[in-house]
Image (cartoon, helix red, strand yellow):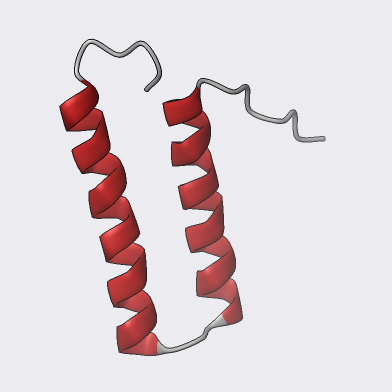
Length: 58
């Protein structure tokens, strides 16, 4: 996270998430529902890292 006291650990979490998403894609191939779920997870993590607010869901 920007301004984090533990940037190395934060980078490890993000890198691990990206690797997991890539690996699942290789194992299962394209799956629309799974792809959308992984995109939501990755987007959330990136927002946490960058310190941007979550959009309000209606």
